[in-house]
Image 1 (cartoon, helix red, strand yellow):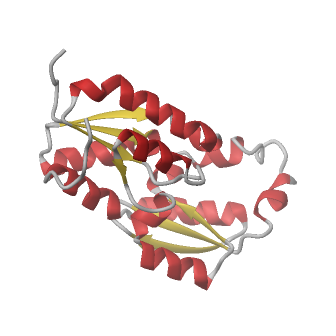
Image 2 (cartoon, one colour):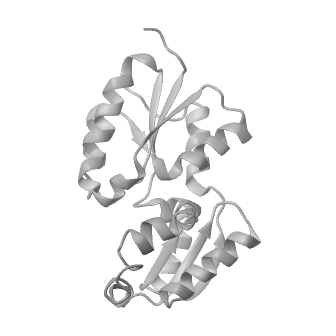
Length: 205
């Protein structure tokens, strides 16, 4: 089979909406996107093998493959796979860092180590992933167990919205946390994909 597009972005499902938006905003029709399930974050040890499988499924069809994941809790195992496969990823430990930028994220973490972060994706799915996913809706006593060591919730907004800030503030109240909101835009996700668009990533086919 010949190339169906010049570039494939293998992405975390939590970034799907943002990557599609960036592709449209920047007119990058040559980029295809294939997402892995966002709930792999609950089992980060499975991310490297899933990414490797997706790379090998598509290697012959694309001139370039780029991975839209940070380390995401794999403890360096994802980087081992990517080094072996000759593929690059977004720099950083997690999406909070690459959205906010390393220096801003480090400053936030230093100012309050007990910080819980929300992105636009996590805000959209707050009830499903946090309240229901952790069982807090059924067992309110679990709130202290999960969030007892947190002091603040920081909402890192990819798209500025007064409505979403209000929803994030309500989420902080439900968790009993102080609230802060920052508009990050797409951060290193955007700059990484722009670099891919310009051909600035290495690739071994």
